[in-house]
Image (cartoon, rainbow, N blue to C red; front, side, top):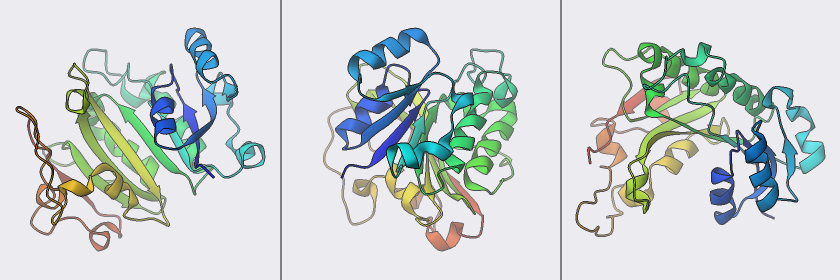
Length: 248
């Protein structure tokens, strides 16, 4: 049986297509834009649709779809982008992040996958990203004095949250498109989120394959998080660690 996913802020189905190729079954898609809904209906005519995330009733998911394994969504970035007015999570659009949390918390056994612009890390001098980590993990960290780095881990009673800034140009796309990807693994799988975002071929003992000219892998997570590295014991008590990505 394939793992099941609910796609919030589905857009035209970017996450959905990738998840299907990874073996998931998308059982519900939610988006408020009429054009996006038409695209979703064309490519996923048999998937259940919702039009307003604020009206979602995640308590009914189990009865309607069975066990949900993943809640995903790229929540609105307009209030977080450095190109906008930067109202942050207090903004009407980017504030819909809290709806994602509401739905995810109603399905505590499910993983969470989210993405947004890198401006999320600096919004309101880093305070908004501290809220994101706190709402998802259950532990609200202080903003580091030198700001949030491009990758890190935060663990709390709800689960473990890992984040990493990735650039589309290193994944076969002919454009630069940096985004923050955020993964929450449930409390029953403490180290899972970290393992998802930091590939095994970057870990000690797994040398990465050769790359073409101009390509580099991010350095190992152990190096990026300091001499001790990051392990379950280090983050299990609500501490967090942050590390730099390699500069490309």
